[in-house]
Length: 394
Ligand code: FEO
Image 1 (tube, rainbow, N blue to C red):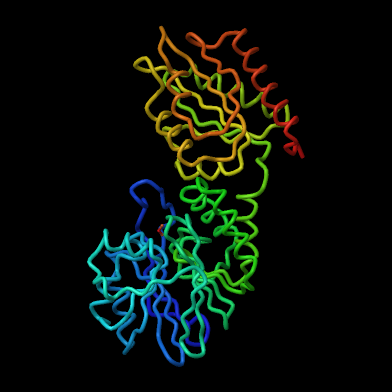
Image 2 (image 1 turned 45 degrees about the horizontal axis):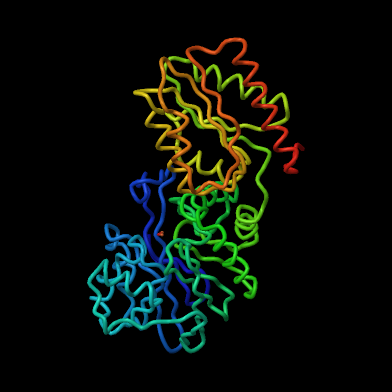
C-alpha cells in the first residue's frame, strides 16, 4: 500500500502481511498481521518510527521514495519484525541517526549490521524536537522485550506504542473500526507475549496515565483513534480478578479421558462454573492462550501414553507455564492402562504457576460410577474455591 495520512504530516507506512500464519515460529496468526512504520515530518526534521520485517522491506523502501531526507530512524523495539529493515533504510539515508534505548542498541548490534556511529541513545523522558513536533521517549520494558520504549508526540497527543496495544490483523482498515475483532486479536497478542510480564505491564499502564492520549499507533494492526477501548481492555486483563472460569485443555486416545472431561464439564456447568474446553488435537493454541487470560482454574486432561502424559498435553502445559496466567487453582485428570507418572510429570512442568493444586484424579481404564462421583466432587471443590475467592457467579 501507499503511505496513508493519519494527521497533517503524520503518515502510516509499512506492510500488511496477509499470508503469515505463524509468528516467532510459535504464535498462530489466523488473520495475518501488519508491520507498521510511521513517518513524521516536522518543520525542522523528519523521523521514521520503526521499520518492517526484512522480507517486506521493499514495500517500505518504495513508500520512502518521495522522502528526500530522513533525520531520525527510531527503533522502539529491537525485535526484527520492526527493526530488521533498519540497515536497508540506513543505507538509503546514511545521515540519519538511529534513535533507541541503550539496551536496544546492544541488541541491535548483536542482530544486524548498524555502524556504532549511527546510534543516538535516548533515556527515559528524553525528547527530540522536529521543530513544530516534539517526541518524548518513554521507556516501557517488557512490551515485549526488556529494551522496549514508546514515543509520545506531544502536539498531536499521539502515542506510538510498538507492540503494546497491538493486534495481529491484516487489514486495509487504518483505524480499529471493528472493535470486537480488534479486541480479540489484541487479547490473543497480549496473552501470547505480554501476560508473563503482567506486573511490569501494570506499572507501564500506570506510567501512561500521566499522558493525554487521543490516538494510539501500534506497530501491529490498526490504529486506535478511540484509545479507551484498548487501554481499558489491557487494564482489565492485567488488573482484573480471574473469572469464574475453568480452562480445560485435554487429549483423549480411546475415549476414557474424554468421558471424564465431558462429565466434569457438565457437573461444573450445573454448579454455575463456566468452562472453555480445548481438544489439543484440533485447538488453535492462541485460543487457549486467550482463555488463560481470565481463567480462575486450569484442569489438564491427559491419557497416560508411554508411561507419561500425552506429548501434546506436555506442550500445552509448558506453554501455560511460560505464559504465567493469573489462575489460582489447577488440577489434573486422566486415565491410564497399567501405570505411569502422568501426574508427577505434569506437576513438575508448572513451576511458574502460583496455583493451589486441587487433588488430581487419575483412573484405571474407562470411568466407572465411583469415578463419576469423584468428578462431581472435583467440580464441587472447584465451585467452592471460586465462591470462597469471590469470583462472580453472575
Ligand atoms: Fe512485534 Fe516483539 O515484535
